[in-house]
Length: 475
Ligand SMILES: C[S@@+](CC[C@H](N)C(=O)[O-])C[C@H]1O[C@@H](n2cnc3c(N)ncnc32)[C@H](O)[C@@H]1O
Image 1 (cartoon, rainbow, N blue to C red):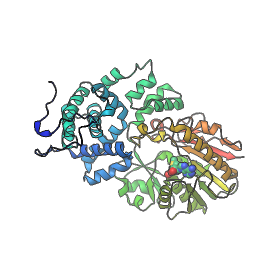
Image 2: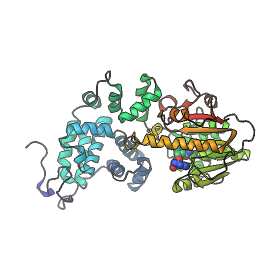
Image 3: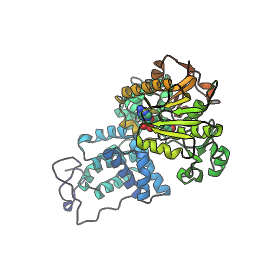
Image 4: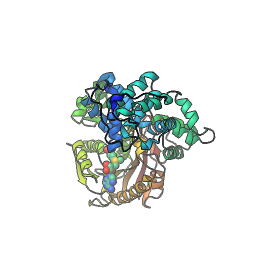
């Protein structure tokens, strides 16, 4: 027999296969091997994402704290955990090529370990023998110790080539099927690669756009007007004033949760693209009264807080609508002290006076394809089937926004997605009395905004999330 031998004191042979062998037992006579805590945290995160559909970015901080990891250990755990989540489909394609069993038939914890091992082999400088042995140790120390040999065998095959070699072997030829090739090479589901390609228009831009999704996003802070000055915040956090947002600061490093101005609500974490959307919604030219604003889909409240802070300075008020009660509570917490009323209601029929609002922001629920770099697992969780239902909701919300805004007032339609169905598709079928106005002058200094009148930002062009903005005036 070739391959690793199983020790007799390890109970029934466990091969990683789901099966009738009953609950796996941990051997009682030997001490489990010591495992590396950073990798254990990464493995726990993969399990949480797989088993209970956890959000990686919300779950990891708790796991790091529980394991008391900080500094370099925390950085390694984060890189391995987020990286494995992002690359999941690509890792699975390689693992499947190295396994004689269907990945779908493997026990979840074994699959998690394989993914973590494959990520280290293909995407880090960790030497192959170390990547394999620490992963095998994790399996030995875990709930499926009998699958250690199987894990070892599969990972050795993975390590026999580098990423470029695997892409060459498994992806379609680049010049015959660019979308298929880049989908595997940059680990995106094909429908998402296609959606980005359609929105970009320029095939040369596709690879940089996909690559930007695979790099972690920088942290941007917003200095809330009336709370703290942008330059003061930049000096306080050793950051740099943002290029375009008058309230933005780039945070070079460190935990934003420890910044005093963030803790007391004078500042917050907010992507510069989101700040620009709120500022454009607030400053688009308008005749007459300009003090009654609405945010029609407000949770968790980042833009509502910026709008509320601007209104506090000029003596106006914002009605913020959010359908999900716990997200409405998040909005309440975020806008504390600002002139914002929060309503837990359906934006399609919020029960507020129609034709009364000077400005309505509709930051619509969407696929979130514009923020994939922030949500490591999101690209594998979303489905192309989600798009039609979201587009229907977006159109109904836009109809409602058109009813809520007063004649001459402004509606800002925003998505955190560049998917054409959610952006130009919705705007193309807008209510008749909403006239498109050129959004580009409302983002002064921002380059590469195309032909207008709508605006599409991109991570690879602007360093922001891929936010879309259409500004509309009610006739
Ligand atoms: C893109 S998020 C808004 C982000 C927010 N503007 C911010 O900056 O923090 C969209 C929000 O719309 C909410 N939503 C979904 N359907 C809704 C509806 N029918 N009415 C109101 N809100 C809705 C979602 O729960 C989600 O919180």
